[in-house]
Amino acid sequence: MRNKGTGTWIHRRRVKSAGAPALVVGDTTITYDLLAERIDRLADALAAGGVGPGDRVAYLGENHPTFLETFFAAGTLGAVFVPLNTRLAPPEVAFVLSDCDAGTLIHSAELTELATVGSAGTGVRRRIVADGPIEDASEVEHLDRIIEAASAEHRDEPVELSDPAMIQYTSGTTGHPKGAVLSHQNIAWNSFNVLVDYEVSARSVALMISPMFHSAALGMGVLPMLLKGGTVVLEAHFDAGRVLELVERHKVTSLSGVPTTFQLICEHPAWPSADLSSLQMLTCGGSAVPTRVLDAYEKRGLAFTGGYGMTETSPGATSLQPRYSRSKAGSAGLPHFFTDIRIADETGRVLPAGQPGEIQIQGPNVIGGYWNRPEADTGSYTEDGWFRSGDIGYLDDDGFLFISDRLKDMIISGGENIYPAEIEQVILELEAVGSVAVVGVPDERWGEVPRAYIQLRAGHTLTEDQLKAHLSGRLARYKIPKTVVTVSDMPRTSSGKIRKRDLRQIAQ
Image (tube, rainbow, N blue to C red; front, side, top):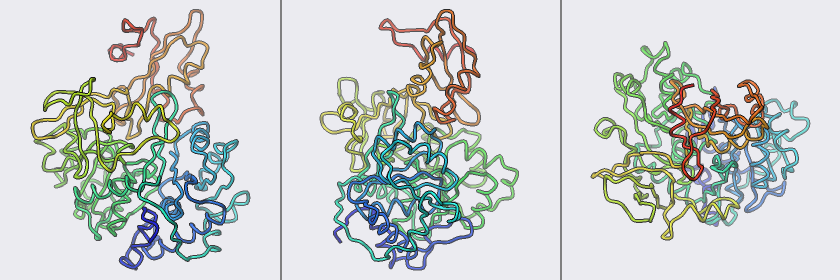
């Protein structure tokens, strides 16, 4: 085959796993051979609309089979898949679509308004509704209709492993998100890491409650499972009681999420009586699992795998196996099998065990750069090719990674990455604001939430409601500060930089 990329994965599986369930959504089961046919038909329909090698195809929607059909159809053509976060505000959607110059946007019916407003004025020339009644799609095409009319013949376009497969946008440290360009090789080697370091087989059943537009859900959960020939159960929205029901109904073997989701599951009234006997692997990312949650699952005979990674590592960098969850408590684990980790100081000197410094990562799963961001590329890699994470950590004598701090001030709220600079830039649009600093503060449910510290200009006033009204519609709701604190002066360094660590000590 001339296509060496991820777009061939389901095509290669269509005979090996014919009749076996690939995806389950609601009461519908899609077998590997049927999924392969739908992917080929969608690829034909996209090609008929002018999509070719290197063109960007965006997707806006919750977990649904069409998300994966679009991913693999784009890969079949050598096009580039661009998943959009469904929680973005219209201006944020517009920025991503314009930045990557997507010509095609496939979106769910329930997000039609966001897709319409967000794509207005961008380079999007074709919109396709992914689901819902066909008669409701009067102004745009409907995916099922174009698939039905398309050819089911498989297209073998020339695609190299080094070609871009996907652009995943990460919140920007300087106010705008930037697109991490994942090659087919990056995605494949990340999947190999998962298959080597975790127990995944053709009999595995993964329940996907985290959104696939996040790199962790797609890269660590869904794609390795499909590569191996397992089954993925898709849920569009998280509900703790339904999770327990689906685990029992489908004999789910693996479940991944963030601490908040696992906490809500074990606090649900159905938890004590739920049949969890099929579960073999629980994967938690975003932040450490609270001890009380660890205890609740261990009482049911279940333990967690954890890890560390980022979109730029496709996304896995390290993993902590359940056998070490207590003896190496607080650790992010060992490097994945085909990935290397080192710690370096500000001069680039590699540090010995126990000494904190910047975490640097190398491996075939590490991206080669960002979409149209040469300035970001320049500062993201060392001279000898290691990716600079911007995070501070250290390795112990056994090689386990421990995270000490985040250089980039990133906030992780319910598994969502939030960069304060992006929020601060929008707040500074207000005439009343002299200076602002956004920091993360502890939250029992979400782990962290943003808090804004604001210094007003002389003679101006600003209420918390006025600030939130200004941010509403400009930023995704999860980025809007939950609390606002007005200060008379900002603590600053001698160079004038705001000392955010000192702000965290100021009571609300």
